[in-house]
Length: 617
Image (cartoon, rainbow, N blue to C red):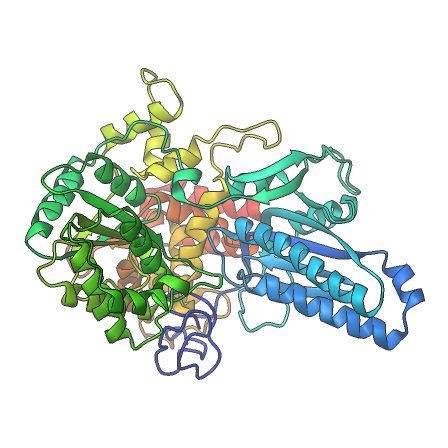
């Protein structure tokens, strides 16, 4: 149902992903059938960002224009708004009169849905300026809009083919009320949106507001601008670097080895493990013979970018900062090829092999006066042409002292075939405690063991769990997750096929550790599932668990064929559990209370599941 690279929905019989161009497996656009006895996923609770946009003064406009003219104008405007929303991965859910409601996070959650929604709101406002210029020339009038954006939990259908997602909940109502309180041309956003979008959002306070239907006033902010999303700006790079001695030593070794010929590294780690921070620290510490010149580029999950834009960004920096050769000679032909294509708009203007040959010639020449280092971050978003270009460039460079580094998460774009793997895991317990103490600004203060257990050595998880509440954002209860982490892990879980998601949903109710045979029993008795014939064993879930293991969501506890499994991270279980509807959780807790492992554990274990089922109902 989704692209293996960018996780966007695929049309039926798609040969290539329409969003990023990745080749699709035969039949990939058709719904993935669940394993025998496993139903499709149901409605889910998920973190989304809702955008309402309404036309100002539409009543007066309808009295001044012929109905046909008004209809044409409205449809044109809806088309422009939809283009801005869909370009950033949002879904225009409803058109009501002259207003539009869009949802970011349905059908697929993205880790940056809040930023995408704010970018869409600003894009809509810019599109209106261009549209008004046209209206003034043709009709002698202008239109105005107001926008409200809010982030939070909703209940939504999980069918990507549905015409309308039918999201519901307080998040939707608050977004609509924010839009109604906005002035002409204003964009009002809620506190959760501000928190989820990160520190580079420029706002001014516009509240607290008394919204219809709300007893307490709601903090609101007027959106002014949306800054860059570079990790250096969004993450806490202002504190001391912790740990990673082994990884830094390995990068230093590869830097030294690159003096004898081009080296290509693939640095892989889950989101938040600190890949970008590690590379930054390595660059600042890099020493040795020869002048290192670093160039960096980032792959993007959405937006209108050239397929080779990250490579172009890195090369531009290297060429700008590299010292000139003593003879002043430049390969004008090769530079001309790059200037007219790659360095112009991030796309090749000649066949890819020819462009890579020209780039290798230029980089090899540059390597006579320095040692070029090209870093391509967020490699999991790399489109196929970029993967192929890096592979060709590595081959063409040969003995030139150039270092290529691709850094990304597992499960996205495949690493270049010739890349040397370098894995980045979480910090150990002592290093995580040090980092947490630095984050709270009290190096001598002991950090709660529960916090370290939840973060599991992931620096980003620690940052978010320790995020202080400001005046507009209330502190979260200890058992709740910040919106950023919900979206980050929700995006990984939301990319699963129906069978994988169904098994994960059942496992998260059982607990952190679970038995595959008992999981199969629960799957066979779940509502909407055909029970196996009398005397037959329920279908095994092991093939599905193996796929979840490859996605690093679960892992076996032992080595035997009947070994139990557990979630690879406690937060993965928390987010999967939080996404289930209350009805579904209640039913599955009631079923889990009858599992042999639970009944053998005693009345307290049985009662725990039944109490949860009762409270949820």
